Length: 403
Image 1 (cartoon, one colour):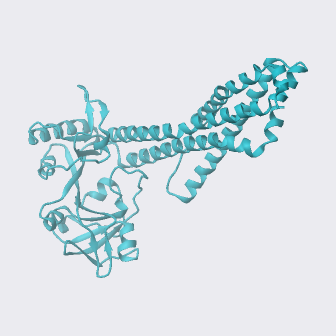
Image 2 (spheres, one colour; image 1 turned 180 degrees about the vertical axis):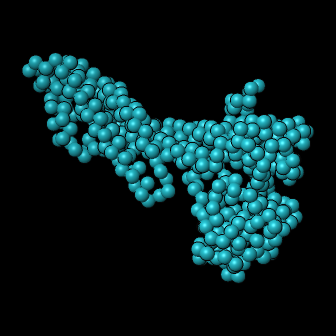
C-alpha cells in the first residue's frame, strides 16, 4: 500500500527525493575528489624521494619539545602572507655540513613578451642548474641551462608557456623579453604532474631563468619562496635538518620565522590541509541531506492530511495504530532509500565523467558511500516518524467525517 501510494504521485515523490539525491551526490563526490587529490599528492611527494628537505618562509607548523608537528598554520601553509626568505639564507645553507645540493625557488614579478604576444598567466622563477636533478624532472626538448650559463640570459620554459607564448611545442632558440631584457629559450621541460589544488606554483606555466640573473634584472626584488635541499647521504637527513635549523636560527636572530620540513612532514601538512578543506565542504554539502529530510517530513505531513479519510476507513475496518504507523513510515523510508540509491549511482557517474573530461582523479571510498546510505536511512526514520505518528493517532470517527 505504501509503494502504491508513492507510485500514484510519481512527480511529487521524485521532487521529494531530490534533496536526498543532491545531498548524497555532493557528499560522495567531494570526499572522492579529496581522496583522489591526496593520492596524487602522495605520488608526487614519493616520486621526489624521502630525503628531500624543504625550507619555506614563515612558521607553517607548531612543534612540541620532541619536534613532532602538533599544529598547522593553515593561512601560511596555503601561501597567504607567508613572505619570503632572506637572500643570504641560500649561502648559509650551501655552507652547511652534509648538504649536497641546494636549489633556490624565487618568484620574479612581471610577465614575458615577444614582438606580438604577452604572457602574464604564469610564473617567472629564478633557480639554478640543479633544479631538474632535485625535482627529478626531464627536459623534453633542448637542455636545462648549465652551471656555466648561470650568468647568461637563458631560459627554460614549461609546456604551457611554449604553447601560449610561442604557439609551438619546440621554440628552442627563440627570444622573448622580461623587464626589457632579452632571453633565449634553451629548453622546454617535460610535463609536470600538477595537483588540482597545488599549494605552490604550477611549473607547467613557469619560465625558469638563472637565479642571479633574476636578481639582476629586478634590482634584487625577488621573492625567495622556497629552498630545496638534498643531503650527501639519505640517512643523514635528520642531522642535516638540525644543522640547517641551528644556522638559520642564528642568522635570523633566534626568530623562528622559517620552516624546515622533511618529505613525510610535507605530506602530513598537505593531507591535513586537504582533510580540513574536504571536511568543511562536505559538512556544507551534508546540510542538503537535512534539507531533504525536512522536505520528506513536509510532504508526508501533507499526505497525512490529504488521506485523513483513507486512514479513518482503514481504522474502521480493523487497522491498528501500528499498521498505520508502519505504512507511513515505510513511505518515508522508501523516499529516503531510493533517493540514496539514485544519488549514489549519480555520484559514481559523476566520478567517471570527471576522470574522463578533467585532470581530476577522484577515488571512491566505499566506507563513505555506506556511511552516506546509513545517514539517508536514519534521515528517513527521523523525519518520517512524526507524520507517521500523526497518522496513527487519528481518531477513526473524526477521520471519517473529514472531507
